Image 1 (cartoon, rainbow, N blue to C red):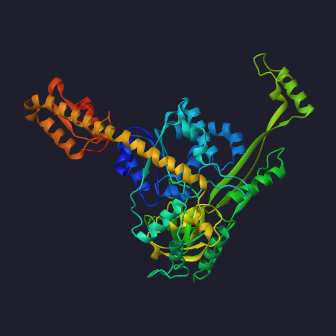
Image 2 (cartoon, rainbow, N blue to C red; image 1 turned 60 degrees about the horizontal axis):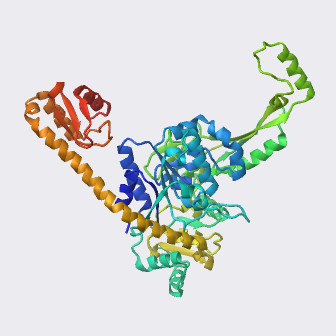
Length: 562
C-alpha cells in the first residue's frame, strides 16, 4: 500500500505525481509536508487549487489567477490567450516557478489543464509538458466534477491530451485518518463501490432532523446558493446590532466609439461572476467569507472570519480571521473586464492616415491598402465594479465545502442534482453522530459511472508504481549515506589540522548547531571544517567545498550566526 512517506519520496525525486484517494486519507496533509520539504531545498513552488476554499487549506491561490485562465469558457479562453501570454504578472509567475501544484483537480476542466500546459510551455520556451515544470496534482474523482451549464457535459482532466503525455505517476492513498467510525466508514466505502446497502441507507435516515450533541449552531451545507442565502440572511436578522450596508459601484467604459450594448453585456457578466453581492449587509458578529485574494493584506478567496467591529473613520468592517485570529480592515476592491476588438475604419479615417503618412520619412510604417491592419482600429469595451470582497458565511454550498474537514454539519441532501455531491457532503464529517440531515434522496448516493473505471485504473497504476518506487527509495537513501560516510572518512585524516583552530571551532559549532543550508544541494545539513588551503568547509550531504569567506557570507545572509 502506498504511504504518505512513499509520496514524499517520489516527489523529492522529481516525478510528476497525482496524489489521490478517499477523503480523510491525508492528501492535503501529505501535500503540505511536500511543500515544506521542497521549500527547504530552495525550490520555487507555485501552490494552487481549483477553488478558493481548497487553496486556503494549502496556503495557496486559485490556479485560475496564477495561470491567468480566470473563469473563461473554452471559446473565450482561446480569444484571450495572447493577452494572457503578454501579462507581465503571469509571465513572472511561470518563469519563477520550478514546481506547480494543483489541488482538487477533479473540478478542473480538461480544456483548462490543456491551456495551463500551453501557457507554461510558451512562457518557458520549452516544448516539454508544462515547459519542464514538475507537476503535482491532487484530488479525488469521486468528488465534485467540473462545473458546467445546463445541458453541457463535464470533461474531466483525465480526458485531456496532456494527461497521457506528462508521464504522471499515480500515488493512491488508502489509510484512513479522518473517519474512525466503522459504520460510517462502511457507508462511504459502499458509495465508492457503487452499491449502497439497505442497512446503510437506514442508518443515514436515523440522522434526519437529529440534533448534534452539544452543538448549537453547526455549519450548514446546501446544494444551491438560494438556500445558502436564505439561511445566511435569517442568521443575520437574529443579530441584535446595527445594520451596515455596502452597495456595489458599477461603471462601463466611456472611450470613443464604444459599443454601449457590448459594455452592458460585459457589466452584466462581470456582476454575475462576482461572488461579492450587489448589496452587502453586515452586522457586528456576522460570520463572513472573503471572495478575493489579497496576499499582502493577509486574506485569500475562501478565508473565513467574524466581523468584530467597524472602522470609525471609513465605516469599513474589521474582520478577525478564524484561521489565525488576525484582524483585517476590509476595504473595497475592483473587478474589471475588458475586451479589445478590431473594427473597420471609415474611408475618411483611412484617407486622413494616408495623407499624414505621406508627410513622414520613407522609413515610417506603410499605411497603404496593401497593409490590411491599417484598415482597422482597436476598440476597447469594458466594465468595472467595486465592492467589499465579503459575503455572509453561516451556510455554504457543498461545492464550496469540498476539501474541508468537519466535526459536525447540518446538510440538505434531498435535492442533490450533481453526481458526487452527496458523497462530498457526507465525507466532510468524521462520524455519523456529527451529521444532521434535513432530507435525503437516492441521488445523494450516485457517482458518475466513468469514475469507477478510471478509479480501477488509478489503483492498478499506483500498485505498479509502488513496485518501481520501493527499490529506488532504498537506493536513494543508501547513496545519501555513502556520500556522508566517504566525506567523513576523508575529513578524519584532516581532523588534527582544524581541531586547534579557534576560527574553525567557532564555525563548526555554529554550523552544526544551526543546520546551515548548503548553497549547492539546498539541504539544511552539517558542515565539516578544514583549514587546509586557507580554510574550507565541506557539506556532509553533497560534498560541496566552499571557502570560509563564502560560508560566512552565507551564514550572515540566512541569519544562522551572530
